[in-house]
Length: 193
Image (cartoon, rainbow, N blue to C red; front, side):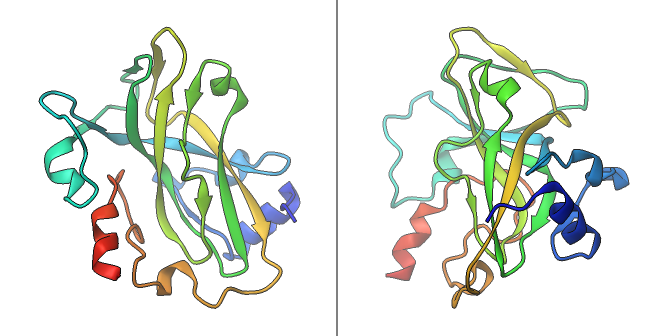
């Protein structure tokens, strides 16, 4: 079952769903009918294309392929057609053991061709940290986006039972506690065979 606005508000106010924002921002004002809006942080990463032929999933990706940048609050980032960037949410979230969250884009940005997650839009029970968005512009024209703008929303769903192995207990929880956008850590999968 997806939580309605009143239940999202109640669970935030009781601390069951924890949301940390910048400058004590009123997170309650970001609650929609059945979701919670989130915003972009000022830091993003993207893969360097120059002199790169292939990304090898058995090698540490971030060492050779990712470049990090920082924007001021009102500074635009131009997302060109088919660019792919990793961008963190301004808010960090702690998801309780009896919920999962689904990350979706806002329809206003979807209508401009902005996709905020390619595949990883599912947030496990007991995850804690910011969410790394996998953003692409599928439009044919560039789109300017800004830090602190509302970019997407989380829909919360209840679990019928508590999970046996929540995210924070799994030995391969590679992104727990992340604060900045994180590149793929798929190379660590090999360590857990």
